[in-house]
Length: 435
Ligand code: HEC
Ligand code: HEC
Ligand code: HEC
Ligand code: HEC
Ligand code: HEC
Ligand code: HEC
Image 1 (cartoon, rainbow, N blue to C red):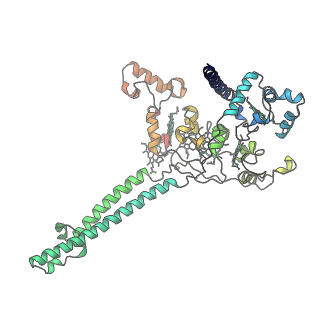
Image 2 (cartoon, rainbow, N blue to C red):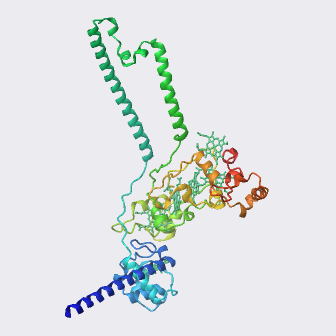
Image 3 (spheres, rainbow, N blue to C red):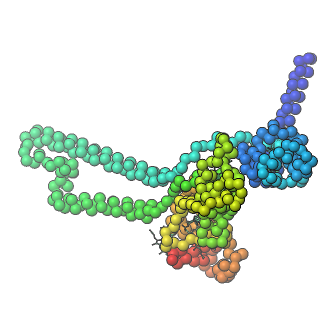
């Protein structure tokens, strides 16, 4: 009897703890949603100081009651005279956090549960520059080819020797040893018929065959490989990370590449844009000590900025030295490419052409940028011809053709749906892309 009660009690306790766990989990999931919906992440990260403090461990630093008051209305909380709240505000130089009275105390608890239980990120993989990797792969193939040719020659020589020996043995047996046995070394390597040929004809013959193979190979190489810098990821003068800024901090690409919607060029940001944040952020939050990070110091040097100056007027010196970023993407001068046409008009995401830049520690060229690559997409991309004045004429013509059953098949994609491509609008005309 007692045993049974004990088992029952145990079962109850277990199921209670399971349901509690499930509840905490649901709470954390709810909290994650709220955290994201309220954009806490635009100023906070869990493990790193951004605009506000790193939030992991905050539930150990502060009481729940304190946190609820702070998060819902930090301004009122500070005015109420709370010493910790005012000290924190001062520590962050008066950068004010938003007010979130839309969040109920219970919802704030969900957020705190999320902060408490969010998994720690895996340790960062070491930063490896992919500088020159593509080139290395190519030369590896070349080394293998050279090695194979070497082995081939050695095998030929051995075979030739064996053959000469056999001939000599055969000749000795026949008793016909004499002039004929002294075959020259080269001739000894060749099949009998070739060996009997006129040497000049033989040389011409060989040169033509080898030359032909070489030409075919270099032709193919020239067409598909020359000038292709896919994978090119040079080391930049400042170790600027897109993975951190565009990925983890979720900065919009256009925040820095300001030309991308209006002009041909996306533009590399002026270093002043960096200063919007790096006047304040002088080192990575994970760095030890209080010194300025050497990478950030390069930003200051470029602007001749003195972070320790007493006032703003004295902070900027007179000897700025612009950063020379290494250009990665580079079409030849005779080709014309326009960003606004592709980003604004066609609505293409940067990643279609540049790959997952927000995951790249060091930017690399993702696409080949060859003519075939441009043409391929112009043949296959769908454009929204119906809602764009630029395509009015084309759209009218297509609508008419479809109605009259004329040239109908060209307007359908492989999935059987109507599809208008840039190619139909002259996107394959040489003059559109060549000056
Ligand atoms: C506009 C930027 C901004 C946003 C958005 C923001 N915070 Fe803050 N937060 C700050 C700053 C800055 C501080 C440091 C105190 C100060 O200067 O006001 C801070 C402080 C905090 C603290 C106290 C940390 C500590 O170490 O004591 C918590 C907790 C916090 N924020 C949670 C949140 C949550 C949760 C959200 C979303 C609902 C949020 N914050 C949204 C800027 C922001
Ligand atoms: C904080 C500013 C900033 C943000 C945000 C940013 N970039 Fe950049 N980007 C730079 C700087 C600085 C360079 C030059 C140094 C380098 O190549 O890393 C650059 C270089 C590039 C290049 C290579 C340019 C070349 O030389 O050919 C591409 C492509 C690029 N960014 C795409 C993106 C995309 C896509 C995003 C959004 C996902 C983005 N960037 C967000 C600052 C930024
Ligand atoms: C919106 C704010 C913001 C902008 C704009 C910005 N950064 Fe940063 N950057 C940060 C923050 C925050 C960190 C620190 C992240 C951390 O704590 O690890 C950082 C870190 C860095 C680091 C790493 C420092 C180190 O010691 O590891 C470098 C280098 C850097 N930024 C360069 C740049 C450059 C160059 C630009 C301009 C093209 C730029 N940043 C623009 C916010 C910004
Ligand atoms: C249709 C393909 C395509 C799309 C979409 C695209 N790019 Fe580009 N991008 C290119 C090509 C091609 C070049 C090389 C241009 C040249 O050398 O003239 C380039 C060059 C760049 C450069 C360096 C040279 C410059 O123009 O300043 C940056 C930075 C850049 N792109 C950023 C972006 C960003 C940010 C986006 C998204 C907002 C984007 N690109 C969208 C194809 C594309
Ligand atoms: C990922 C697909 C894609 C790639 C890659 C691409 N384009 Fe385009 N391109 C488009 C689309 C879609 C349009 C139609 C834009 C619009 O709606 O006007 C377009 C339009 C154009 C136009 C304007 C044509 C017109 O009708 O006026 C030019 C010029 C052009 N692209 C050049 C290039 C060049 C040069 C390259 C290669 C370096 C390239 N594009 C790569 C998708 C692409
Ligand atoms: C959609 C854009 C586009 C169109 C249309 C286009 N080209 Fe190109 N072309 C390029 C780009 C980009 C390059 C440079 C990249 C390369 O060398 O592959 C190029 C390179 C070339 C080259 C130089 C190749 C080399 O090795 O340097 C020749 C020649 C050329 N194009 C001829 C033409 C002719 C002829 C037409 C019309 C039938 C044409 N192109 C149409 C984009 C285009």
